[in-house]
Amino acid sequence: MTKTEAERSTLSLAAIAVRVAATSLMVAAAASLGAVPAFAQALPEADIIFVVDESGSMGDEQASLQANIIQVANDLAASTDGRYGLVGYGASNPTPVTEQPLTDDLTAFATAVGGLTINGATEPGYDATIHALTDPAIGLRSTAGTCIVLATDEPSNGDAATAQEAIDALAVEGAFFFGLVQFNSTTPPSYQPLADASGGALFDLDAFNTDPAGVLNALLTTCVESIVASSGGKVTGGGRLDIDDGSVSFGTVAMADEEGARGNLQVNDHVTGARFHGSTVDILFALENTASWSGEGRWNGEEGYRFEITVVDNRNGNSKKKGIPDTVDITIRDAFDAVIWSTGGPVDLTKGNVVVH
Image (tube, rainbow, N blue to C red; front, side, top):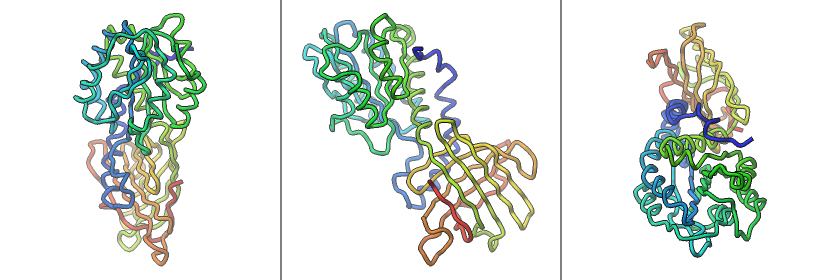
């Protein structure tokens, strides 16, 4: 079955922003530790490459993309560190060309879209997809998720490469393929295998012409959701925290995979007698030895509380003789977002161990 933007209608940029907002705050604390410089990025990184057909029938679509990309990308900035690149293909010389390397300068990107031509007749979409993933000039980031967004009203034709070779190129980069294609009898069958194999989707080009901002919003939202979902990770561990002479203990299991995010968190303050049980995980980010996640739970048996946690696994357990101890940073909030308990920033794990898998 062809996946369209209608099937993704429950997704929104606002929903993703809510899911990552708490984690963004936690990552800022983790970045201050200096343990993993790349993790200082507060939001998941997305490299989004538009691959646009330059044949004679694509003028209106190019104009709509140019007119709407800045606003939609600015909205997306609430939930991702996005970079945008542009590849043109199918012009009078149908060889794909990198028109704009990945950039966060949206004005430069929109200007590049405005410079596309509409004078070709051959549309080698498979070649263009491979070019977008393999041209060094594009500037893919090794730490970013990648989405290819191919816009065309024709099936792939005149290619040197096959559909399978394009699928292989997507797999090498772990990239998602999204097609903004005309839903006729020939174009979706040409690109559906790329979307299916990569975990992407096809969106209706005619719907884009009617509501360019809405369809572009839905497409890019789905791209970011796919990147976030694929980030995955698992954290296990527990022990005593360096607070009040080790009077606070905690334990946790958190994971994220193709089935979603899940896990639990236990915090026991043995001085005050307060207890927290976190029973859900909204979203989990893990990079190298640092992980951050958030969720909901019960404070002293009462529902309606949220937690945020960042851990750094220094691979030494609690032994200072072996090096720097693991660190834990926990904040618990009530329904009004007021902080009711926290570690006061990252604290050492004095007894126990945390493992970021």
